[in-house]
Image (cartoon, rainbow, N blue to C red):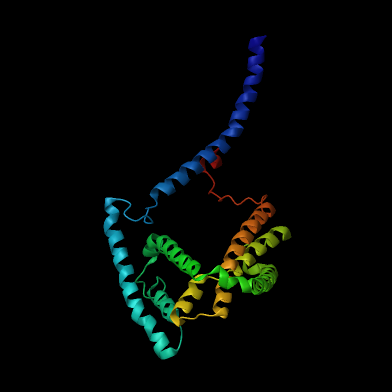
Length: 261
């Protein structure tokens, strides 16, 4: 009896194993392919990653230092002859030396040094902006700062959300549901509210401006940063909830094992 039951269930088990084999083989092949790609990609994004990476790191650092030295005289040209701020010359120097024009700083340099330069520059600028804010001088302008920030935030959010919702065909979420489009549009619109101190502080230092208008601009700029951080974090969660059912996993190529079986 037991032998007959075993013989009865054996074909069923074999057919189930045969049905599951292609999917298991496909997933195993996809995992192996992804691991192979990760191992095959050379890691050029870490400074002094290995002894073989030292020449590349030194050459990238030298190119960056040379561009910095050349950006200074180019930046001084704009206030003197074109009547534009000093930071405009730095922008032009960065565009000219970037990977899309002169290629003095190619994509490898940007990948290797970009994150370190951004972190250092933003930390220094934020620290400098925090030094310029003196609470007793801002206290009489708290109402003006909040009113200006509220007006600017509501206007930017309204315009940004409408633009991102009305012109969905120009973006990647045109085929998504309306709720998902709204969540993504709100998240993008919250970024448009940001007023970067990296442009405000150089102008203040260059012009040596002081007074109530300067304190109002700095107070609004620094308060807007905090508001944008909170707003973006909340709207990111909202967009994640709306887009929770989307399958955003990378589409792997079909496995030859699955097709053969």
